[in-house]
Image (cartoon, rainbow, N blue to C red):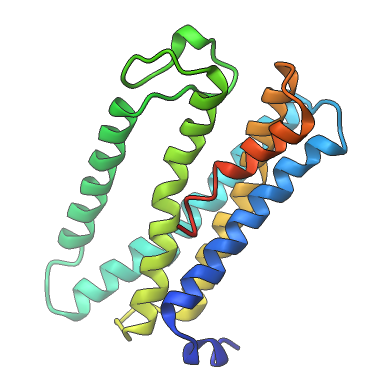
Length: 203
């Protein structure tokens, strides 16, 4: 099914895939033009569902193949993937502590990271953007590993990961645009900031 994709440059494949994930975010953010308000329960349910999708995609498309690769090389199967997992978690933790950001439905005085006088709109977009950086990296690594012929990696798994990330990006676009609209930001600006949060993925 994915044989034709194997002939495409892996950098282009990763660019196409991350552009897809960004476009799905933009589609979620665009709902601000169609609906005046989005129920908090609906948004929470969608974010919970997509969190599950993301966890499954991360395991089956990244962690499980990494363990298989390590085992095929005769090494301790969990060691290298475990170190990489912890290093990635520490990297994100460091970014979370350094970069000023504000989570959805939190007050401006509850902003995290280095103290700043930036607007709550900017801080909210940074919070989602911070989360999207590793997603773009994950898709790039998945396609790169498949193109390099690494054991356990495949184009199919990379595509599945991109689809999983795309699915969970849809409510993320909503999660930025609707709170901004509630704060009195115009529909166009709410949409702009909603899609902007995922532009880092193809970059």
